[in-house]
View: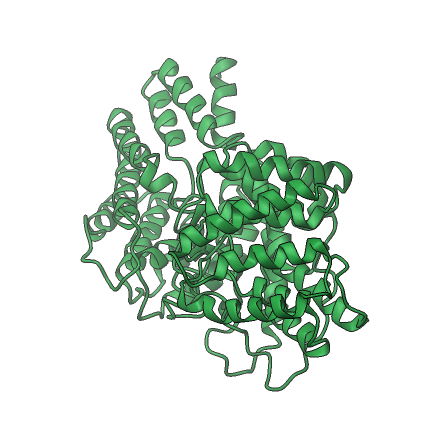
Length: 537
């Protein structure tokens, strides 16, 4: 398992070429989670991710039902303000960022003297696991905290006053934002120890710690905070959400299986929470379940898009996290062999991305998942008729898909032509590339198609060498930590194993198939190969 990548953020929020946005700063993520430059609308490379969706002008803020739980009583006599505060907490913990800020703003409007309403509003404007907030972006939140501090005198409990003072540490104008986040996390951990029975406070402290420490080693404390919450309140959606993230980053996703199953059974209407079980399921080998969860999340996004103005640029791709749901769903569908879901998700992604004229290499790389789906499951004639995308990495992905289609048709010369059309390198286009992953993808696709040709020409040893090369690149830290799910659609090591078996090297084939299962548990192809060799098949 791996930590969140700085790039997963892009995934979470939008979609490769379409609209990406999972993290502005890598969280250790995956979701990076502090990952990446968040983008919430097409071609807006530097948007912070909190960009509000335009559901129509002057519509009053309304409570949004069935998006989770986690609110808690605050010092206010205004029942409506309390309701919007609770809803704001629910939405914030469900990563419905814009809606959370709107709910908290409504709580402030309803009860302007409510200190904790101000605190909630400020909290909703801050950094999250998926993207950061720079010093300039924190100024409004700090002003709101100062107002909360002023209003708190004589009107709040000790616990509420402590929460307000802790949040001031995150937003104060002195020091860099990383130092502020660490100071806030440290204070929140102290408050969690002081009030261990307050479930949501424990989760808020865990969230703060995860934002401040994005690697595997920093997940022990958040996990220790959340587990007692789940023990006494196993349906606490906020605790489940962050427990899934923390255990994934820590490399132990299996710990969250029961929690993920409970979250899925709730059938919420918060698309990100509907999607979240797949972060656990994918890494324990439940690929079909991961695909199904994201299919449901995508449908929620499509319903949300119906509320957008008819002329809204990007349409459903403007919905935060929609692209991430699509791409994660493709990851599960491709691994499980679910052609129906793969094509349902892949066709619109290809249709949207092929006309884009701007997009960083990483955005293009993520959108390539649509071409992988079509290359794997679409009618070869349809794949060969796809128009060439305007962006270079997507054009390379199309050539790879064409190569897979031609291999299916048995046209070795045609595959060789597609290999030749995939460049060894592409001059960087725009900004936002993440390390070497886009260039590595070019090498992986060329090597995989080279292996296909060698197998077609009965040269299994040459095929094994090509697949081994692709697997080596795919499993490097740069590439394997680049995105969640993995950027390339399947573990190439399993084809390395198949080629070795075809070459008569059963021992080597068994070794590589077992290694594949270490990378992708329960991979169906590798699992079958292990069984065949073990039984002499």
